[in-house]
Image (tube, helix red, strand yellow):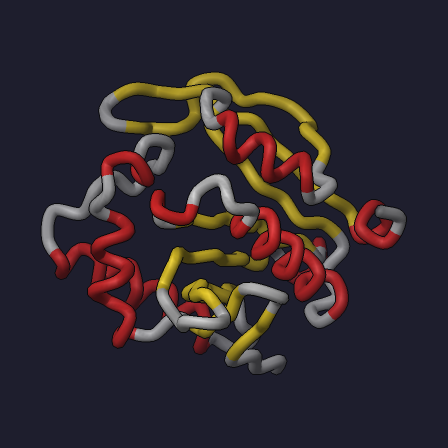
Length: 184
């Protein structure tokens, strides 16, 4: 079993999520701007956020490990700026789904692209996966830009699959293969 506690880029530190991160994560999940395209919705209480973190911790402690969820912080200040995660699919398919959520104070600074690039590198080089997938609402232009910047290919759209604030929204599906990553 591969046990990773931290990853790092030029500007970011990835730390395995823990219950001590509850307040930062709850604040992030409570921001309407950040929640705009999120299917979780804004948590009613901090206990709702605690349940989500507990699920992440269960996935991280399973054997084999089925998920990796990291708090992102600025390397120079250690200030929390968001979350990024990878959930492993069926083992024989060697796939995973990635996701991220950045605090609005840190939008448009390249942090999502930097973090996603590192997580994809980790997935292919350390976890030896074959395919990484991601989805985003068709109106989420910022995420579309990030996914395409890191080399992911739009493979299609599912109609009205995302339950967001009482409405069904369309979702684009993106993927990057190991061979695509090494040929970037």
